[in-house]
Picture 1 (cartoon, helix red, strand yellow):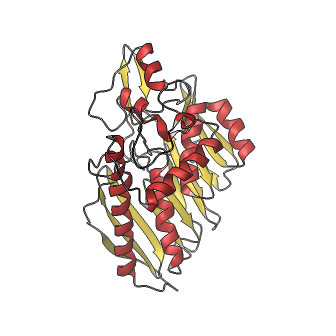
Picture 2: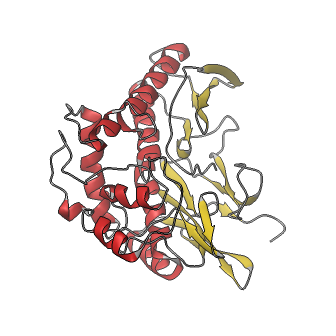
Length: 336
């Protein structure tokens, strides 16, 4: 499974279609920071594969021009510069979803914490990663928080910004899946950094997803696997969040890109990655981030209470350990 360090979907319309056999096709393309792949069964579709490919490309382009903070002309970038905007349906929809996920995650996933990510060098600014002073963090923290948000989506209040990195890729997967459903598709795997799948793969079995090994320096998705999860043929969002691809080190201290919006500081614990299996990709995306904010024990209690499937990989005295909660269909590598 790919885990991109940041949401940077800037598409160049390099969409390609390839046949994978047994009525399945793959639509793929390049996005800055990685690639996307959408595989689906064309049997029973009400449109051609080419029409579907064009529509998928249009969805991804709309996401980029609306939600990507790396696109300086996007709606969110203009909003974060305190310009007056006319929010489109997507902008309003994802904010409403963010409020639900904020509550569902026990306040650990907060899209209004964007200024904190900028402060630590993990946001949309060009500032280098740094360790800010406590009083500076406190000042920025006072302007963050869903409870402090002005509620106006036409123009940000001074000092307020939004950052959808914790849910945007999962949200995008769900948008593409929703489109495919509307055209009669039943078997699909939507991989846009995060994953949504439903139905069966070309093999006639559930989709198989590799879980990356969360070691610092493992920047190539799929290069090292900590196990395989296979779906049961139902609809699932499956997302991994981790602290092994985006971080900085100051005076021997590692500072990860996962920031606790309640404290203003990057987290520091032994949970290395959290893979969440939920009913949709946006929820899985947010809850994987929530687990990385909480740490191993709190995350274990959280997913058990909420009923999500989870694969938690953590460090114990220098060795990688795996804790599985639910997540039926997950198998460890043969070497473990």
